[in-house]
Amino acid sequence: MNLTTERKVMKIRDIWEAKKRIAPIVNRTPLIYSAILSEKISRSVYLKLENVHEVGAFKVRGAANKILSLSDEEKKRGVATFSTGNHGMAVAFVAKRLGVNAVVCISNRVPKAKVESLKRLGAQIEIVGDSQDAAGERCYELEKQKGLTVIQPFDDPHVIAGQGTIGLELLEALPNLKDVIVPLSGGGLLSGIGLALKANNPDIRITGVSMEQSAVMYESLKAGKPVKLEESVTLADSLLGGIGLDNQYTFQMVQQYMDDVLLISEDEIAYSMAYMMDKHRIIMEGAAATGIAAVLGNKIPDQDGDLVVIISGHNVDLSILLQLIQKYTDGNEG
Ligand SMILES: *Cc1c(COP(=O)(O)O)cnc(C)c1O
Image (cartoon, rainbow, N blue to C red; front, side, top):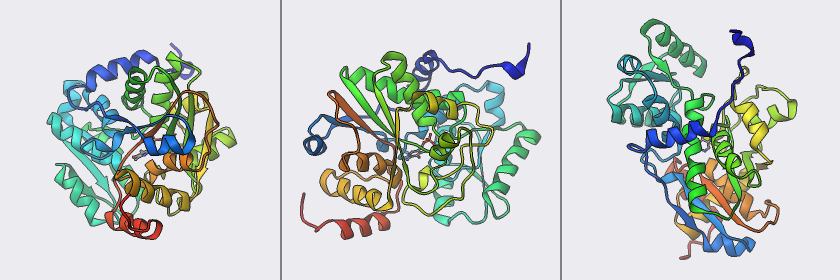
């Protein structure tokens, strides 16, 4: 067998299996019709509420599918991650539910509030060095020395399949689905949803949305290969981070499944967060607001059929959200 020519291809079956596997611990999320957004662009707009998961983001789907697919032996040894964001929280949450030991490696720069919420979820914290890279290295050391399994945030077939279960839920709910707008970072979310939808109906259009600065997948697609970028400050902090220079799955899957990609400015993200709180009473983090900005800015080509925005998460500092509400709304009801 020649391993170097092994092709990394996922099948729709992987997502059906994920759906069955995660059902006991991941809730099916609501899909709601948005009258106000539908009126705005004169077509039916639905919101897929991934913000209602207990950890406040869809990443619980991928983490659950990955950890549940480990052998008993691997589960006994435990899992590790160096993400302090939504992925780290999801890994900690799922591991606790399943009685699996989870170690989160973090640098001493990680804000205390984040460390506290990870601890509350039952994760074991290892503080190492003063950079994300040092934390990552420690994670892989734990894998070598203690046999912990490092849970990747996006470039892993079980994680991608877990996120893809969103696509199956959409297909079941909306027979006339035409457009799906998906926040895009490492591309696990878009790859999974893309595979689920296109395998059933290649005419469903998938639009990725990222922030203007440090959109690594966007720049990588333009370059034709994974590239590295400096991170900048953005409201869509959950969309920051590289895609991995030796990316195995998501780069080619995003290339294959994404019909269009839009970059959203910080102002548009900020306005959309305030708008959704004001008009819809839905708390969204910046990453999720990129999709709403695409609708409010009328950036999606006119088509018949239903449009879905994936509301990917709600983990935003409330003081930031309050500032935005004050800045962009007049404070009146509705
Ligand atoms: C991780 C994340 C994304 C992006 O998902 P990828 O699989 O990395 O593309 C979008 N929104 C939120 C809230 C996230 O946590």
